[in-house]
Amino acid sequence: MPDTIADRVRRYALDGGDEDLRRLLGVSHVSADMTRSALRRIGVHEGWKAIECGCGPIGGLAVIAEMVGPSGTVVGVDFSEPAVQRARSIVATLRLDNVELVCGDIHDLDSEALGGPFDLAYTRLFLMHQTDPGKTLSRITDLLRPGGWIIAQEALRYPPPRSHPHQDSLRLYWDLLHGLLEQVVGAPNGAVDSLPRLGRAAGLEVVAANGSFSTMDPEVGFDLHADTLAAAKERGVASGRWTEEQIERLVNDLRAAKAGGYEWVSTPFYLDVAFRKPLAG
Image (tube, rainbow, N blue to C red; front, side, top):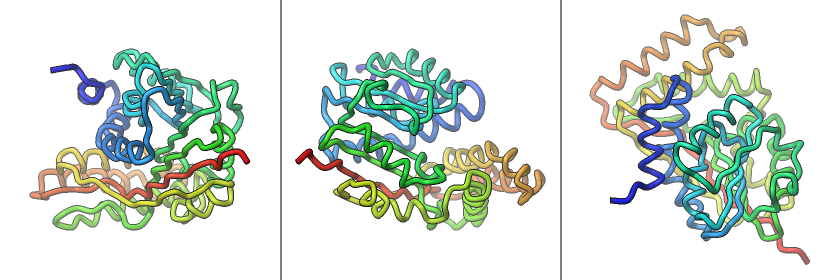
């Protein structure tokens, strides 16, 4: 059988380096079908020029690279130099020859310098971290050709991730994370819910707005949620709202749940919005 990009991502996720890298690769893997479905709905095909804003060490780069094919190009942008260095290593390992990585703030980079204008811009768990998501959407719009697309897949605060049977630690951890985004990062409460309105204010057409979540095997899902909370521990303690003991107890509760007879655990609930930049004239 052919060695697909999805196969390579799965292998890398299993033997990637440190815990946070493994977590981000895991998020990329469980979100791949959601990303692929959204891109298919707008007709992404070979030869497109795409950009992912806030790609981290892999993001949706592998899925997008596969869909635009060898004749297309994908540019991944992230402001974190360590994340970009990791991404370069992963891209080389996965043999994603049509992917380029740029370290920088998307607000400060112009389309021409990045190789644009682009047919597609993609964000996942990126706009929810912005202090002014509307301004960021406007900036991304400037990177597109007339008629170009933005696919934004961002996690809602409500409802929190779920499981069967119910595990209240999921709600507690999700509330903690969003409180941290608001207090430390300065992300406005409810911004993801308002993405269609913010897109219209940025001059975009809202072509579709959907919501979705995926279910995961409890052993995988509870670990991913626990790893996400553990990655936020230092900033959570520094904010003064939570103690190290409180966060560690919640991390331990999430990890213990994977052996608690649960049938499934879900990802966050994503708002999935397809925007289009109007055609000139």
